[in-house]
Image (cartoon, rainbow, N blue to C red):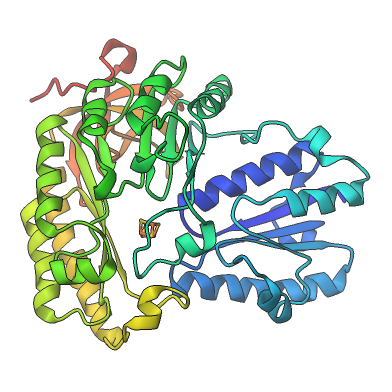
Length: 439
Ligand code: SF4
């Protein structure tokens, strides 16, 4: 028993969980495999936020049955949001799965692997940071969520909010910096609610301040924020702290107050507009992304139009739009009728995507001619690839090796999705706020 295969679907939180489980398995002496058929331990890290994700997990689980039959001593594990507090029903549906683990609950698998290897897993597993992290790395700082948006399954699967103490996060970020990580993204379902559940209630601004002092880390990002918790103190910290990037992911979900009420989002359209205005006033050159759900039960054409109008008014930098799908167990699934036809939901999603594509075309075109600080993450199709502080994807060509470096790129071409440019100056000569020298 010395190899594992890990398949992950879903949000960045799931990716971070998988990275941490992989670190634990590798500390126990196991090697990663590219194919499930070659591995002694197979882990599927699941997501059920949308029906399409759950369908993919179920279809992958079906592939595990013959693999288990082929080698019965192999361990098959299902992890993540598909696993609720009780797994009896899952065990009946998938009898060949040996272990079911809720998000972040790695112990049952580590114990089983430890027993097979004849080792005490607690003795050999230390801090769970990726063995070979990239230039950028996700760091979960909150697990779970205390809000109960009516459409969302996450609080039922990930539980109540639990924040990690400031010093524990700081030590992890220091360890990542020692391994060459330059940028960390702090993760939470409501990341701006960080610390509310901790003794002395430190907040996200306090954590930013602590992490801003970690040597080797050049950039700090955070997601996902909830409008209810985005305080002026956090906004000011984004403006003031040189390493905290000017990029905020702030899901609005809908532009109509009636729908927001039914979603139980706890803010109104006017409050959201006011918040975006305050962020833009406080943080120059900030980029704001949002999430939208179309086709929520009962959403009329007029209510949907409110969402389009809001996006036209705010001209946000990026929109992730999803069609509503009922998640069994949520309040919406019990109390609202999901009667909008799929074709209509798809059409509304396409209208949002089309509008946003035009907005992004204009926003990105305005950047042509400017100079931007890029953190180079790697190469793609023969070009270097990185991101601006505001999280815009940039490509440039150059013979020299740049991975992990901050460089300055002159933006020469744009599309709705990315920017193309040429190398201008090595970044150490510019300041960390990425001042725009060209305009
Ligand atoms: S804030 Fe709402 S949508 Fe986000 S995880 Fe919590 S319940 Fe789900």
